[in-house]
Length: 407
Image (cartoon, rainbow, N blue to C red; front, side, top):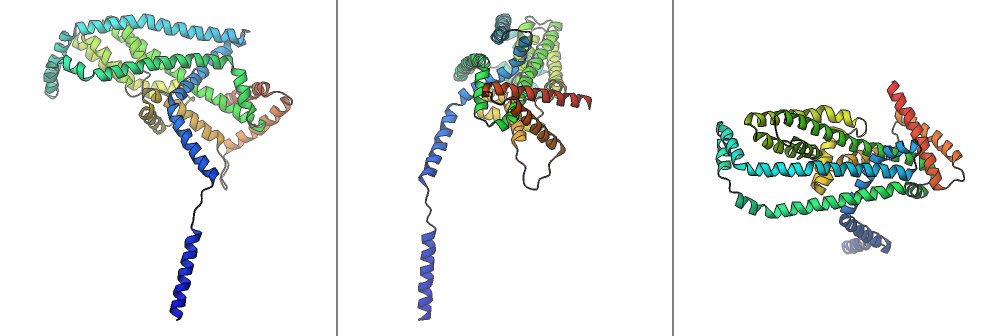
C-alpha cells in the first residue's frame, strides 16, 4: 500500500514539474525577433548603398583638410568645396585622357605582336627542364576555344566595371552634398546624443577623419610612387608607351592581393616586345619594389593613421575580399581601424579591472573638456555647439601630438 502511495506521489510530482516547464514567448518578443530578421534581410539588400555611403565618407575625410585650408585663407566654404572637387574631377579626367588611349594602343600593339611574343616566351621556357611542359602547352594554345570558354566571365567583368563606375560617381556626388550640408548633418548627429558625451563624440569624429584621410592619402602616395618607378624602369628599358603602362600599374597597385599581378604581368609582356633580357629585368625589379613597398614604404606612409597589427590586416583583407570582392578588400583596412578605434573609445571598465595611466589621463581630459564645453555652449543650438566641441577636441589633439613629439 505504501509503495502505491509513493508511486502516485512521484507521478504527481513529475506531472507538476512538466506543467512548470511550459515556455511562453511574449508578443513583444516575437515582434522584436521578426523586426531584427527583417532588418538583417534589408541590410543585406542595401549592401551596395552602404558601401557607396562609406566611400563617400572616405572622400569627405580625405578632402576635408584641403577645404579647411582654403577656408583659413578667407574663402567661403562653398567656394572652397567647389575648388577642391573641381580639382579632383580635373585630375581624374586628365588621368583618363592621357592614359586610357595610349594604354589601349599598347594593348592593340601587343595583340598584333602576339605570335612573335609567344614564340620568344616559348623559346625562353623551353631552355629549362622545369618549364619545358609550359612551353609545349603555350605553343599549342587555341585562342578561339579560350575566348568562348571565358566569354561569360568577360561579360560579368564588364558589368562589374560599369557598376563600379556608377557607384563611384554616386559616391563622388554624395560626398559633395555631405560637405555642403556639413553643419546641418553634424548638428543633427549632436542633437540625438546627450551633451555630456559630445566631447567624446567629437574626438571619435576627428579620429575617423584621421584614419580615413590617412588611408586614402597613403594609397595615393604609394600608387603615385609605383607609377613613377614603373615609368622610369620601362623608359630605361626602351618600352614604348611607358606612361600608359605605368599609369595602369599605379592604379592596379591599389588592389590587395591581385594588384601585383596586374602591375607585373602587363609590364613584363610589354618589355618582352623589346627583349627577353628587358622582360626579366623588369619582372625582377618590380618584385623587389613590391617587397620594398610592403615592408618599408607602407608603414612609413600610413604612419599612425591605421596602427593595425599584421594579423588584423590580413584577416580584414580576407574577410572584406570574401564578402564583397575587390570593393570590400579596399574598404577593409579603414573599416577595421575605425572599429578598433571605436572599441577603444567606447569600452567600459570591468569590475576589478585596473585603470591604465593613459586611460586615466584621457578620462581626466574628458572631464575638463566637458566642463569647458558645457560652460561655452550654454543656451546654444546643437549645430553651433558641435563646432565648439570639435574646436575643443582639435586643440586637445594638437597638444597631445606636441607632447608625443617632445617625448
